[in-house]
Image (cartoon, rainbow, N blue to C red):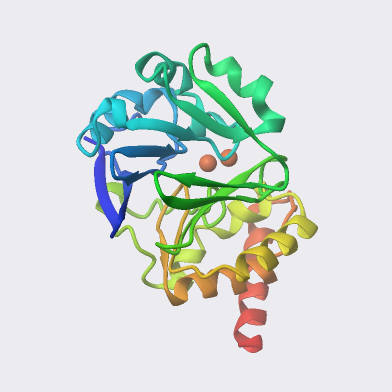
Length: 267
Ligand SMILES: [Fe+2]
Ligand SMILES: [Fe+2]
């Protein structure tokens, strides 16, 4: 069973789905999110084909089928949106908000009924049943057209693959959803960011953009979520991490140790 956790509840609800102990082996555990405002809901990065059934039953515990009017895909990856063909049959009236650059690619997953709303490079703001939602550009982090979702009222940034971690020390279904010890957590994120994020320039631009936002929760698509001071710690750490490096893991870890020292001495 897919677990669902309400991470914010005021005028709107933010619900996180994931940590399914019965998930297929050999694939990455992912976090899916849904924002529900009144009688409308948007599913963010709905996930892979393999988890469509548990996802659908989990979201239907929180919203009626006709209330799920919108989907969002941060980028084109299979763990993000390869389930599209099934959503397309289940919610034919829905709208998918996704990068304009990936439109003719994402449609290969099956998009005959759903309306594709192409998000322009500069991002987009939209009114969602009376709440404000912003699609914040995060291009080349890691996908060449990529967006994060910011809710200024809840102060939540859904950050896609940024902040992602893979901690294999225990089953993810038994782990806390929140980062508690930053230093031990970030070891499970370092290699992923160095290897998958190709551009220092894009990284710096994104950090500048995101530092201007008021963020209480940073919610990535894999692993634990960052809350309060953990968000600032992550941004400081990421700023000092060299990205766009494909070499062996030991070298990556050494670089990580160095960057950690730089962060500590800069603090
Ligand atoms: Fe990805
Ligand atoms: Fe991912």
